[in-house]
Image 1 (tube, rainbow, N blue to C red):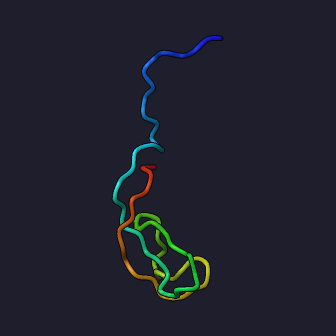
Image 2: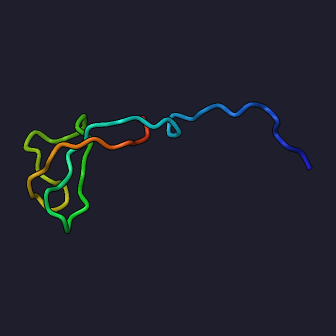
Length: 61
């Protein structure tokens, strides 16, 4: 049996960052979008309700 003993590099998806996101204001909806990719009207992509700005820890893309 062979094992890879090389040091494993961090993949970009392993790097977590604090990112601003817009989340749906409706408690029953789980919709959200990154601020960098938000539409100009700032409506929830799933239900169309208003969104609010918050910070989440997400993978770097």
